Image 1: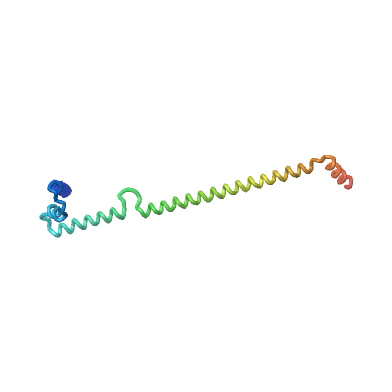
Image 2: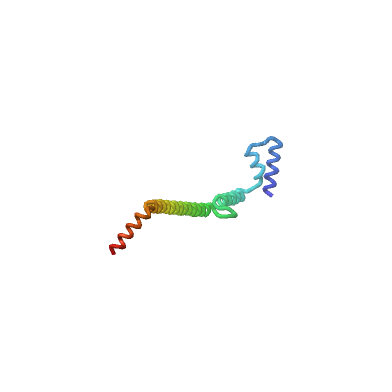
Length: 127
């Protein structure tokens, strides 16, 4: 009922060119007692405080910030674990590369078969 009265008063104010707040309030609140006005103002303040502190649906702002912090920490931990895994993979690849180079170098140095046979034969003769 009051919403319709407010809408009607706003239309009337726009049509007649009245834009003064005092005239609009006098028109809306005409005949209201101070007790009723106080109760209505307290109800409106309560609604404004409730809407400012919490939402009707979903999580409150405090819970959303905690959930966001948890998601950020989980994401950060996942990134760190991925970097550690990547570092270990590169380290393992580097060690394999060094082993392969050393193995090929040793094989290259041992390619002289007659010299290797003489060394082996002399060791076997001494035993």
